[in-house]
Length: 608
Ligand code: M6R
Image: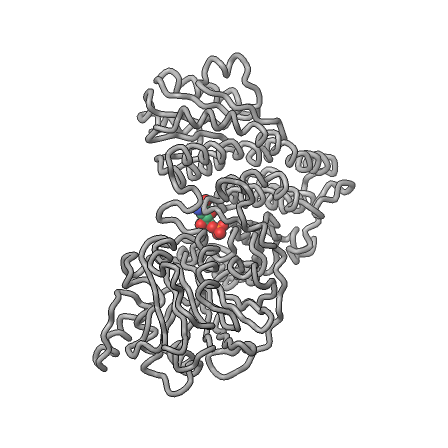
């Protein structure tokens, strides 16, 4: 989604802004721009397309000035054109704004301003907002912004500068993340920490309804009225190396290859081997409270939703507690049946997904206890839930989620183990589960060590137009996730199904052009899934089998076979997904796709 960066201090702003925008590229965008205040006024440069288009326009002649704002835009209202790109300026051209989010009553405000003689050059809601600030300006940018925001409905993370008040940035947040970077005699504003890490690790997270006023001499936080607010300065743990590619050709490949470590980090400190259970104090729930839970609802979007489905299998199987998994976008509008005896688990890599955040708020309103399985420390969901587990997977930059998925499943395993041990899982079963969990990182590495094999396999399927992914039980969500990975980065149409569902429709698609990926570890339904392979083979489909052992039986049925180490049945998704991530990656690279920033996709979806 859109990215925001702003700077005020002693250094030249423009190059810092361009660098910052580069760090924000991973969020997904289709135009970019900067505005800088200097002795000659306000200079705005913007361009449709990638950041390189803006850099070409600047052609090495960066505008001078020590305060500025920069933006990458992911189009919502209005096409991704240069006029629609941010920053936008007010009627006088003296005030500029960058904005993430949507101003819902922009239409009415626009009409009112047009009646007062304002003219607009873009189709955006953002331009309306800056014109309103210009209209209300009476000697103080801060007060004009506060007054304008009291009149607007909608969501925003935004930053204003003005040539009338050089050195000042006025930022505000409602529904779209924003943080202040506190440097030495310099201050930053950004939509996430990545553009700041090179300069400072000290940040202040803004909450909804708060404004930040930055000058080269310091910063203040206040609300839209006049109340000043004291906020703690947090230290970001991630360092610069974690958000750089470090020798890998893509972030996605780096992140796939980091999974031995990321899963180890998720599990670290949570396993109590002797007691055969997990320590998850962050849930902020006593044993008594956990025992009283009658129902669990898991809510999330995309890949995180797939992890949630795996959680459903784990929790129901191990703890014998009913679980429902809801798309957050549906949950929030569906009058869901949740109350104080329901535990709502929100899963999110970014911790900023608008629908998941809204689902958490809805669940809290209805009295449910909420916990978050979140990767980004300090993110909005992490701060709003009643408790939770940080994934500690490290920053995920590639738009396609990979290492966050395995860490989400690992975190769900920790929660399931804790609840199950309080109910009906024996200490011996608990210890056995822990042993399997502890062995996973090495097994993940064993698969990663064979990535050449998967690269060769990808070569054979690079020209496919469609693909089918089939799995059963806890590996049905892996089929969904494998298909999602392939479609989002290679643009090959792919679908995931429970294998036995094939006969109820998808079988009609099978011919010699259709690769069918079977996720078939040796579990209770292994023989049944082999029968499904027979059915595909009989219709000429190309079978790719993910199995524990490529024995003679599989060999006869499969055109290609990938071996996966054995593990506990419920933990197998953390292994079966690895070759599917690699397969999608290599197919997409061979097809010349932009793996880290696939078309139309954003890393963190902060609008509905
Ligand atoms: O940050 P979140 O986990 O809340 O994001 C949810 C989805 O937007 C995300 O998983 C999306 O589906 C990814 N593109 C998947 O690779």
